[in-house]
Amino acid sequence: MSTVTPYVMVDSARTYREFLENAFDAEISNVVPLPEDPERIIHAEARIGGGVLFFADSGAGGMRCLTSPDEPVHVQLWTTVPDPETVFARAVAAGARPAMEITAQEDGARMGGFVDPFGTLWWLSTESPA
Image (tube, rainbow, N blue to C red; front, top):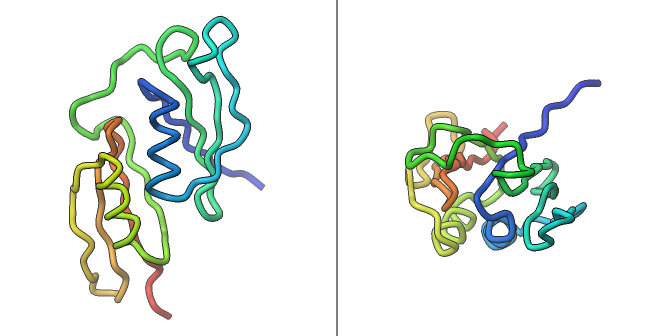
């Protein structure tokens, strides 16, 4: 079986961790500090519901050449959550910028999105009612 796991490189993995915990109640594990600078993280994993997201500090030792963009162009993440309104509100309280308010969709799902403080566009959605 094959899988794909998003790996997000950010300017401050510790701050990103706090954001994921506050916005999504993410469970963080496998945090590996950079040996020469223990304040930086070279790998960490966030479990959000049934999914996993890898993240780390960018730059030297993080293997990312570009800085975070001003607009959410480097990655978008789609998340299915039971209560997108609550996650949206918690994300905004944790520093995210609203991209689209949570609204009802034609199929009965509720969807919206925000840009986190690191430039990642997160889409929140419920599952379509059966």
